[in-house]
Amino acid sequence: MKGTGADRRMWAAAIAAGAAMALCFALRSTAMTSLDPLPWEPPAPAQVQEEGLVDLNTAGLEELTALPGIGEVRARAILEDREANGPYRYPEELIRVKGIGEGVLGAILDQITTGGDEIAQNTGG
Image (tube, rainbow, N blue to C red; front, side, top):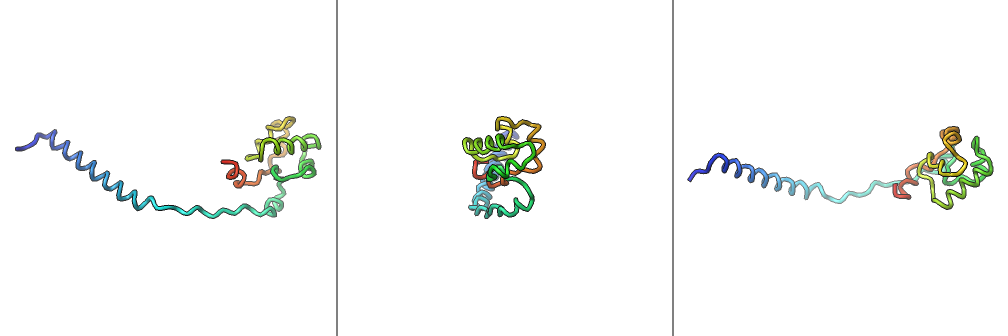
């Protein structure tokens, strides 16, 4: 008994799908080996100091007041905000501090850092 053309196409599609599934499972078993995480080391603090950048997450009152447009009042506000809300992930987050807007941020953006990727990793970023 011979099948119709539609029957033969249906069987061919089923066989092809089965072969594709078998291939996927075979590849999956070899590709799904556990990967070791890459080693990560935070940059040494000396690297940031050599660049001359002020780290918003570690700077004290004196370092912050050395920035243009950041007096003692704004520096204290940065320290209080950091204590209340945690570390800054990006320098642009400094505008969350009352008294610091885009103008002040723009003037110091090339002089500040937040410590790099380790802060983003430690805060879920």
